Amino acid sequence: MIRIRTAERSDLEAIERLLRESHLPTAGVAEQLSGFRVADDTGRVVASAGLETYDRAALLRSVVVDPGYRNRGLAAGLVRGLLDDLRGRGVPDVFLLTTTAADYFRRLGFTPVSRGDVPRSVQASREFQDVQCETAQAMLLRLPRGSQGGRR
Image 1 (cartoon, one colour):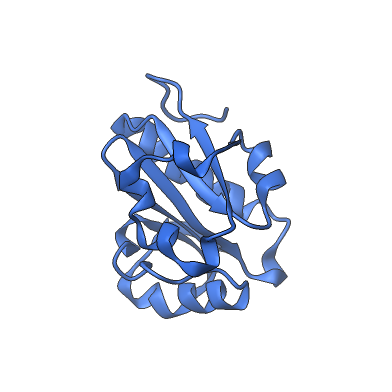
Image 2 (cartoon, helix red, strand yellow):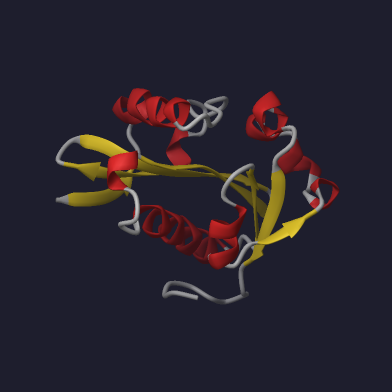
């Protein structure tokens, strides 16, 4: 049975392996692990997603699913849970970088933005500075004020 839970220190190696296998950056994952959630299939991490919070903005990062577990809604479930947490904390803007999944994130409500529109605090993140992300598309989701829980 697959369970969504907060990442633990013991999950770090599995998260980084999933990211490397999907050619996604691992820079900063260890330092930001407290902002990660994982999908756990009886002790095996099969998906992850993370959030880094900077002032009034957040960076959604490291959304990855093991190929054998794709198309089951795991990524969407992880992202929804993280966004619900942000709504509860009153963080209005969520940014991300993607080179391959812009269409997927559009379906979740994100819109493309110029990298220059991303707050400097987010631009200073290790993920944003990673060479793998130099050509990535920046995207933004504005969370409605006072909205908590539920689906959009």
